Length: 149
Image (cartoon, rainbow, N blue to C red; front, side):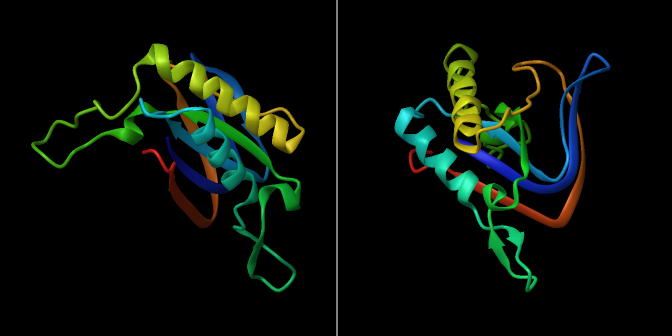
């Protein structure tokens, strides 16, 4: 699994001109699943995500997590995160899990984040053509790979 984690002031995702998910201050998470992902990898990624200290404390130091600041999380599926563009000009997506494998992993990841934060986690629609809007805060952007990716 690969996550691109962006600290945002606000973010939303739209499908067919309908907002399917939106948040205020928190994290926009783009998530791509790999064929090697399993429950242990998901659990590791969720723990890392909700405890990642990328929010400022009272001294302006990044010492607080999304959990600590009561922030929200918006998760958007994005298989292209696992693209390999090292050869040629057309990326290969063989590193991404097939939709039949990726969708249940993605849904489980979202459910685990919601459980950890004890709040709903808005999302896009898996496999849909989505438009994502965000107001990046910082900017702070972290790329996180699971131990199995």
